[in-house]
Image 1 (cartoon, rainbow, N blue to C red):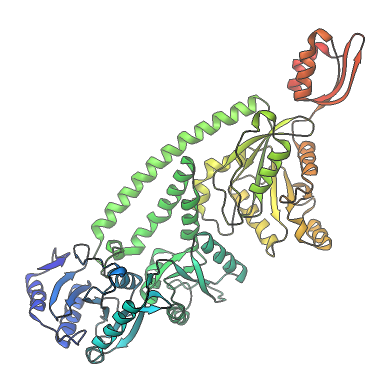
Image 2: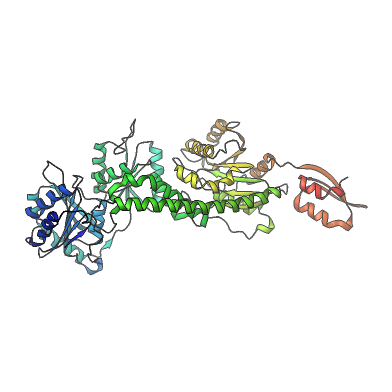
Length: 598
């Protein structure tokens, strides 16, 4: 029986594939010439992968075309101290014999004796790459022997290699390495590449090496040059990486070309950021926004990914035509996007109601904005410690940590200024260079808190060596949100880590520029100058206080208590005819107390 996608395949080809079952391989040979040539020739005709599994007795267990989802090989637990006893031989119609990420994944996951890939290219002798399991520092890994001829692969000492591997498995406590180890690649700046490493770490990926290539123009096929691709492939094998991360957004065709050439899973900066957001999102609206951004990113790349859509993670490197699945996926994604947008519209209406209520109450709105991991959440928690109204004292703090995108969920809390005015302080998601446009679009309902703010506090990590680039990245996102004209205060955070001279130079570059009303030096961790920041917020809010004199009869002392709660008391005297108060108050408080005004 021929497994996989046999629809439309002529009977004469199916019969020829059936004949492979009658071929018995010698126990000590991975492959023989008859099977290799037959699979090579039929792959050229079908332009699909053909896969064959052989047991240790040399019997062919299955032959498969295209999609391997129907193939059933039992998983072997490494605790059983043995391999599966099955070797897999398959073709690569792309003409590259190097094992793909799915090939090596299947090799480890299924504990195959080995996996062999035959490069199929018209007019060129087939080359074969063989992959084996291997024990490296107590971890089950892989080793490859590349670019063999059919004769060299046939004469390879297969049984001796298996004996060494199984003896190593028996003699050692072996663990399966399920972690992701990455090589990061960039063409922009070395600082941007370093940040990509931090993003990878935030996603739980260990960066084992990095590659930087300065290019005037990005290569449309491989992003980097073809020679650099070969260098990356060798480097990734040497450091035992299993994923390659690129520092810019890649097209679907670039991802496909790179995965074929490298033999490793390839992801780009956008995918990495979206994955971090998906891991960190806690509230319903944040999860919806992340899912929407992921779907928008994936939709135009379905065509670019082409036939690889039908590959399965536990498969053996085969690729089906995938055209039906392509159309199904596209329609399904469009339906999901439509449903998620409706959900976000509902959430947006709830936020509008909340904003309208705060506007009716004449509560000024202040938002913290800034690059990711500059200390916004720490500052927000510290300000709540020193200025939270009594009725808000039970509110929980937002999560803060020394990592990129620790905060995704927008939170708003009431604060009491030193002049007794109440404001709302909103902590927003951090920005980053090359923030995916789809993510900004998806998070607009959250970032509307920024758009409708009366004042922005731009928190800056002045100890960062890329501080100016980070400020520029934040300004770019604010421009995309059409929020550049909102008055801003720059809060230079972490001043305890830099020199006075450096601070003076940095302040000189931004004071009275870019619509900044003032620049305050703070340390959120140490609590330095937080009172000065609160004063600066009070001075620059559009809702101004007016001076007023009042005389309140002792019989209406509750009015005096109201003023103590809602106004800034300058003078209070107990006179014969009542309580004399000089205060600064907003228009609403003055209107409620107008019967006592002198």
